[in-house]
Length: 177
Image 1 (cartoon, rainbow, N blue to C red):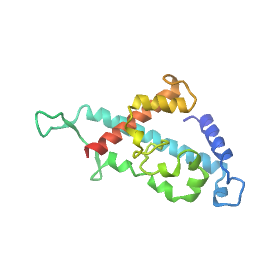
Image 2 (image 1 turned 180 degrees about the horizontal axis):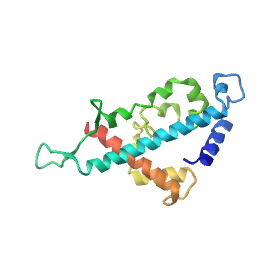
Image 3 (image 1 turned 90 degrees about the vertical axis):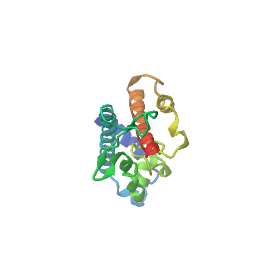
Image 4 (image 1 turned 120 degrees about the vertical axis):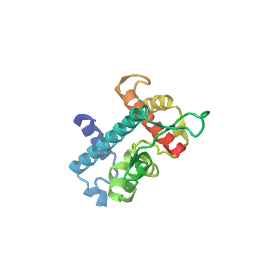
């Protein structure tokens, strides 16, 4: 996310925060802090996307043998510190819900609080959403139209499509394991 887009994003969030001018704890979040948090969340998302894409490339050359010759090979999980890393990232950001200042002051205008858990890609839905299994292409079209952009072309659509394919990788990992 470039700095101009990040600043616009931050300004929208701050201007739509009803508690911004009150004496509530969310008032403690200054513009610089909001910008830094958004930048970190953007970096976390990009790193997660890069990991999932690298996992797919790695899996193209590395399959676990199938338990039966009639069944397709099962994708090999990537283990980190003894755990399936893809399953681990599902709950990595769940701690965000515990921070009232962050949830009320910044994220509430991006992701509904009930959608923060099980949401490693910080989408508007979590992995438990009933529409999550929608075709990634169709979901990206739906996301792009909802954002007021061109449905099937341009950088906004490409970014949404990348996110939805990454989401599918996580869902398949959950289903297999």
